[in-house]
Length: 332
Length: 94
Ligand SMILES: [Fe+2]
Ligand SMILES: [Fe+2]
Image 1 (cartoon, rainbow over the protein chains, first blue to last red):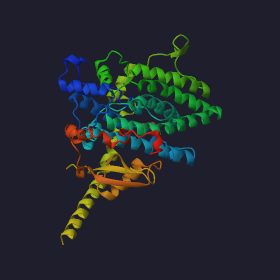
Image 2 (spheres, protein in one colour; image 1 turned 45 degrees about the vertical axis):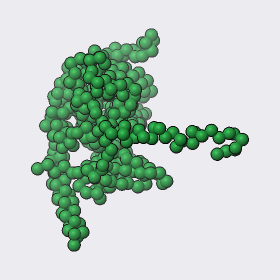
Image 3 (spheres, protein in one colour; image 1 turned 60 degrees about the vertical axis):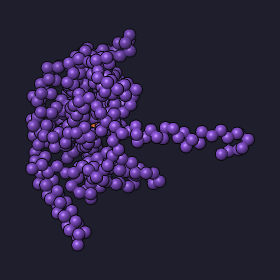
Image 4 (cartoon, rainbow over the protein chains, first blue to last red; image 1 turned 45 degrees about the horizontal axis):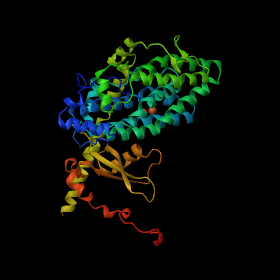
């Protein structure tokens, strides 16, 4: 999802019997629902997988500001502008909570930025699509933040303390994001014909990328099984995708919008919607850097970082100078 | 040259009358900026009435591997809990 493709280093899942005593004790703690804290012993694989997952998640929050940031200066009213600004500011906050959770595992902030800026680190595919109209801001809040909530709610129970606590904080804030988006959609759908068309067009462009946010089917994947055994993942990608579809289709009906999926239909027996398969070739293209906006997003991020270097260095120089003066004064 | 700002731990008093509680960390060049940044990162919805920041490098923590020797001595001192004593009901509320 915000971390769509997280590999563990495991080739297959070890049974309790195959683990050494330390690993077995660790797995026992996880199974009992204990939280693991940063300075405690953990298998290297657990540490590495979490660093990957949390940093991908953080990068997604940070890059995720860009498509919406595009509309801050173009919001239709001052109130909408203030709301969008607050929403985007929350996403910056989410990135910061997550980066500091990852840092407790022994990776530095600069290292993570370097991975992002060099293109080695992944971030969610969803943020590589363009925001063409104001309705896209509604669709993003409704669908993208909606999908994020689906994924993040179970992560609040993640076995790693700092990640779990960051997720609790984030989940408290996400509901505002989804509701402000749905509110934009409601306004448009009750508006003129042109506004309704805008809303429909946004749903059509964001529907499939939103379903891809959950990542490809991983029911049989070793990585997924290992992550589940470690309780850093709770549901399979397909389970979450299904939940999202079941929740969202009635909302689209409420808005009188048509979900762009000819295979979508209610399945009485399952008590769920059947739906079509996203275009996974497109997904793999986008996640590996070839989406419509990958270059632009990464370019904007790197430029912001580089352009801010003199401020970061200047403030640090000032702080050092000031600290030196204080020590000198104290010595006198 | 890496100019990474130092890491600060942030503690927030949520309401008057409560203790400051650890909420997370952030990077800032100095204490003053750390407080300003903490305001924006951790109290956007009025989650606090007071902020403390401490350089992470200045914190000394107990070591997880010494959890036993450090905390186990309290195990045997259950008389520290009021429920250890049976006081007859007739004695009244106590
Ligand atoms: Fe977020
Ligand atoms: Fe959000």
